[in-house]
Length: 295
Image (cartoon, rainbow, N blue to C red; front, side):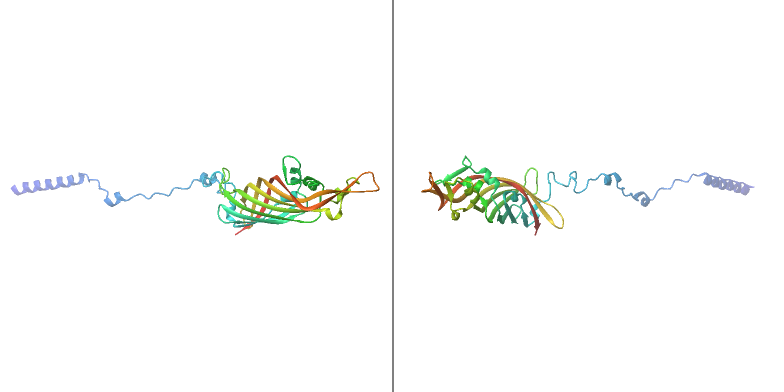
């Protein structure tokens, strides 16, 4: 009986322990350090379609990469430029030019051509007023008369030599502007037949004295702008203006009286003295030049 009671107590204790085990709450599992330290993968940011749509073109003036005021391509990219000046045709001169760039700043230029008539601008600026100064004795046939009455009788020579200094102006940032120190020479052969035939009978010029020549030396300071296009064939374009001084020499004339028994008045003959008169006048040049550049 005693052993039976002890057995019952043991059974009750074992049953309570199993019930306790069934009702015991399981503690929550702790997350492993590996999973806790694992970083989440970030998705790459997608490009905004509006950025591509409203991004200015690379050549646009609104592109921040383009410097402000950089208008046109710099002509310093062309080491050699062959040019033609169509505005000289107005001044009765046809000429071609060659420019050699020695760097971004300095350049040399030469020109060669033909003069096929009297320069109308030179004739307009020449006269007996303030624009012309005569040195030495005055000619019986004045310089202005030779310009206004003489007719072209042949082809004369045109020559030009220049030094150029390129710089960046407030509007052009690629050394497109320049200052040019320019020397020019031109000659014009003229004939006075029409002038001699239009005068009264008491005035005459012998046939051998009717052919004259004008020779001018120009010294100009020129300001201009030069820019170049892009492409397989690179072209250049220039606009310029300038002022200067012109020294011109011409054939001088004197007069001698010819006695005539068949008239009631004397006849005078104008003849060349063999000397050349000198005239100093002002010059004005302006125009456009087209060129083709290459390296």
